Length: 328
Image 1: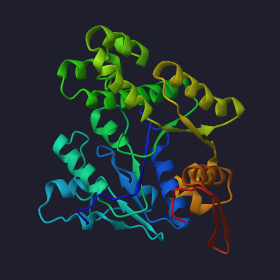
Image 2: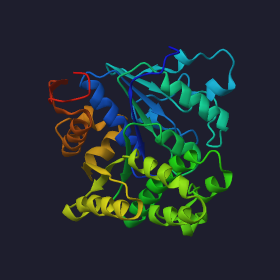
Image 3: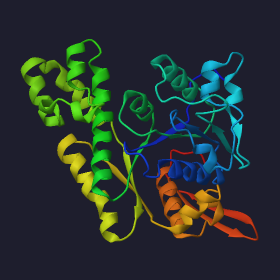
């Protein structure tokens, strides 16, 4: 592994709520980008319930982060597992040792350093549930970060809380010289969040009273925070428009502009692919969910991507748009 920081695009898929399909979306995003010719590494950062390997058809990962933390002699290179898919490597959160969600901050930093030094075009991070710092710090290292929600109101509100917690974590780190201000913007636990600083406007109003010089730091953090959104398991047009409503909610209360990447429809094809441990993009690249994910990848990579499966082979058509910052 190089000691130089990678120039890879890091795409984190988060959302706060468990069971909304983050792992399924992460796998198929990574597969699609790999099929399109990008050198991709898919990383499972859900250490407490690591199951991403199963979606790739890998029953027992030979090595994972838990081995890296607890076993001497496990080099970073051993973590990169073959997937059987060209251009796609995988890093498991599990391995032979039992996983634990409560790993130390030192271990988190080890993982962050490992990810930053991966040599790849694209690194896709599958986030665990929740809004604790272990999750959010992974999300905030991405460019771009993708938030996922299903159309149900509970999921939408969890996703809003995840976006707020991630933004306020960025602001928190701007206040590293003032522990009291850091505590004020700690929204990693929404149930204990300071209601006087619940929105960006309320936070800036509070800062105007006690630390007006910090308002510029808040504005800078907000400007640099640009997540994207995918609505998963959409069943109708109303579900699709949930994405627009969530974007308006985030803009109103956090002053953050979220990009709507697209949606993935509810489909038995997705459930079948999970049961068969085959990414749905490979199982049936011309299904509706596969078409949805191809449009999302096209938006992310500034390309027009189309996959067709014939006689067991997948044929890829890709046109790079002018002005694209991605490698052809």
